[in-house]
Amino acid sequence: MCENVSGSGTSPNTFADNLRRARIARGWSQSDLAEKLETSDFVIGPPRILLRLVELWEEGDPVHNTAHLLDLSRIFGIPVEELDPNAPDTPPMHIIFD
Image: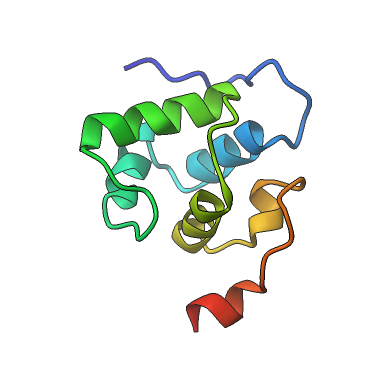
């Protein structure tokens, strides 16, 4: 599968760009991230649907919600705000995951 790594055509520091950057920084493919989402508490679906969800997120489709952001922040080990600066206020990550 071909991955768009050059940018989503949107302004810098969008959810799509930040997600792509975090994934690539870890050396993960979109499929790798989809596999990690299979153990998610919030994102449920068969592997092919999860892969498509990752593709949509990186293309700039705003289909993510707070639950998705919480799960992605747990997977990446980074604050929600680092993934999506426009995210609604969420409790600090250490309260949720400790």
